[in-house]
Length: 223
Image 1 (cartoon, rainbow, N blue to C red):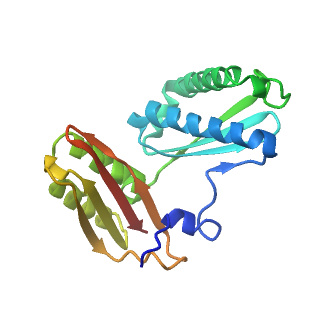
Image 2: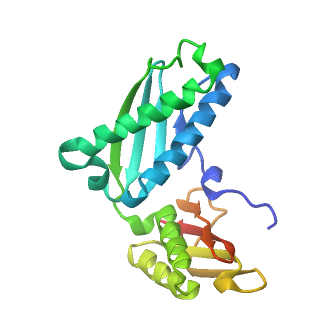
């Protein structure tokens, strides 16, 4: 089959929902979408140590709700909730800076600087080994640290299957182990039916930046 599609996008509606949940007219759609992309990039880099998996964003007229799915919620919340308050200030500063640089946005009342409220919610990831993004991140980090890719992938397969998955597939592409010629390698265990919509298949892509260049890491997990 030559037609490839993102397994999560293929299942939007029946199994998954959108990460950004809001409505905007043609004038504001692009600006709000760009703000979401930059905010996600900022949060993924800042909360990497907390094992962040996903960022959900919901908007109303003057309120933004951010839902953080992390494997270590204690790192985000901090002692007595101090971490959450600090993170909220960081996000408010980040959004305010982004909006101040967009003069066209500043003229619109709904998105005017200072006229918004941020609500943070932290949800724990019950089983990190069943999260495609966290598994791909682990494999990517190990490749960057020069651990043999075959060993890293086989260990990941074992952990995922022991966590109760029906199947898992990992694909590497690039100059694996610093080889002169780029190649692809695939590792799999169990069954991953990509054409069956009712099957819950999680998918993630996390590139690993090695000294020889990028090595792409793709992970499919059938839960």
